[in-house]
Amino acid sequence: MAQVCFLGDVFLDRQYKIELPCENIIFNLEHPISQRGLPKKGKLCLKQDRSFVRETFGSSLLVACLSNNHIMDYGEDAFLDTLSVLKEQGVAFFGAGHRKDNYNNPHVLNLDGTRLGLLGYCASNTNPGHGKDDSMGCALLALDQIKTDILETKKNVDLIAVYLHWGQELAHIPNPSDVKLAHAIIDTGADIVLGTHTHTMQSAETYKGRKIFYGLGNYIFPESFDAYAFDNTGNIIKTPVRHAVDSHESLSVRWDLRDCSVIMYRSVFDGATSTTRKMTQRYDSVSSSSCMYKFHLWFQYKKHSLRMFMRNPRIPSLKDIRTFFGG
Image (cartoon, rainbow, N blue to C red; front, side, top):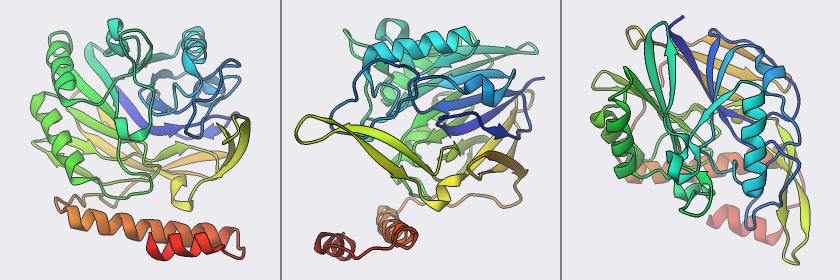
């Protein structure tokens, strides 16, 4: 069947149940799969010792976008282990690797005679591990390189889909600069653009007949899990992480390769199962105003802080009060 289903961020710490309207699945794998490596300094790092990809997604055709800010959290050995696990399980991938291999961009799918090229890139402000001449990593979100890749890929495919790991976490509307970037990518020849990283559903729009989904959200991400980081003394510490309530919803996009039509679905993850229902509401709020975007970020931060406080009430510290009223 010449259809694919695009999903957002996926973090699998065990097997989960899913409901999806399509068997050809493309998703953003937000963690390495390995028992090796040390966490990267200066951030909370994600990893799983074993894979739950096939246990969760079954025998579907699977392609993992690896261009994100966590795939290199535990270094090259863990990344290479991840590639080995995915290959063993028959899961294709793109968006990260070595520069000489163009970070495994593109991966080409052939579905009923239609060739789809998949490209993935990660923004530098998400604190990723980008590849360099002498090291592996994810592909940098840089317009000139994206244009080069699109023009080269178009020689061998019928359609191009671009995954972009970008944006401000918890924001529900895209940064106006990202809107301009997405438009430029469509102008170059991409047929659909899909955003990840913000952990929330963001706006969608049709630009010159092509779809742009600025933020798909979390398809599967546990409400609470453990991340790891170095403390000030150089010791590795376990840090519990809790996600916001609206991080449990995502957009799942079924794309028909025959006519580029899309059907949007709202996926809700309850901690054990991700259920999917066709959407009737359109997400089409895209603003070019930087002032409106900054106000939105301020409002979302306050709302998130209050929600997290209500879920875990405690006497706030002076620092908490100063941050809330002055942040």
